[in-house]
Image 1: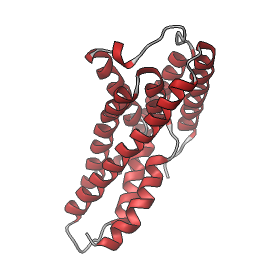
Image 2: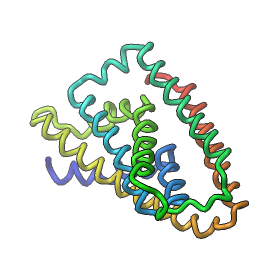
Image 3: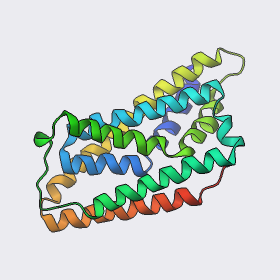
Length: 207
């Protein structure tokens, strides 16, 4: 892959990585509640989901989402329901309980990774982004599998940078919202955003 393609791809890709969305919001909220390390490594769940989507896009299996209204609708409804469930959990969270990263065991870390994975996997628009965005930087005359691998790896690396940035911001908010009342306002704001994202997901259509 030539340098010019990468120079065009990296800023466009990072803009996608940094765009506010349910997963980035979750990373920020996890850092606020459990600390930077827990939020950062929980992002591995998101990366696993995205890696699977990139593989599907590279092998052409993503065409199913383009052609099957039923499959698209099923994934969309499941993803939206999961967003609503997360919103409910945040809205009703006990802000008086001072959860910290030090009190979280391996089981809790796995649960955070699982949440990130399910949230990313439940958004059919994500795989459509990979289907529409990555191919723009593919040279049909070259080795398309290798190019997809390079672009996909770059995307995942930049995604983890975005996770770190949002987690750091959440760490700052953790200090800012040390007061239980402020934590409740923050949690409910996040819950409202997640619920709106779920509603937006239900209203999306295949492009």
